[in-house]
Image (cartoon, rainbow, N blue to C red; front, side, top):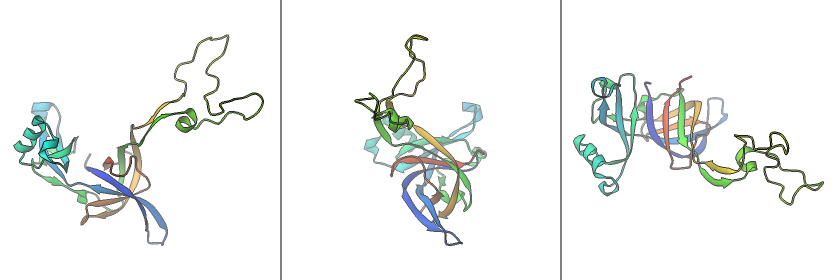
Length: 209
């Protein structure tokens, strides 16, 4: 992996391409990240860099994390993430990583945590059809319906799609195009939608496909 960065989802808008066609884009405020630690083959068995993102007050962190930031002479941050860059050995502690590593037209994968929707029924959670409105069905028409045969196998089959917790899970959307890189504002305009609510943390990395 050569390119990867943390960012916050700002929201969606649209821009116009060279043919004056409207292109829906998600605005992601990316970086800057600060390298605060390194993982080496000799000590850890692999090469990676530990990056900090989103500055916070010292009172928001515990002592172990504060010690890490003081050792690296870096400002306290809310998020710590490891990235296994191909040239991780060349990244020194204190280096700042921003959105300039990306270029217009790059293809990326974006990961984030989707909106939590709580306990939901099968129609909202699994897109099930509503039951018939006639012929003795009801009084509930949005329920799951039959969950197994009466005589054989006389038990509920495993892994049935039923009501339950929906959302608040990590999702990755692949092969999204970077429409524009605004280095002055530290912003990436990515075509299409990305997971998570406004203000949610997302990870943008070069696509694996």
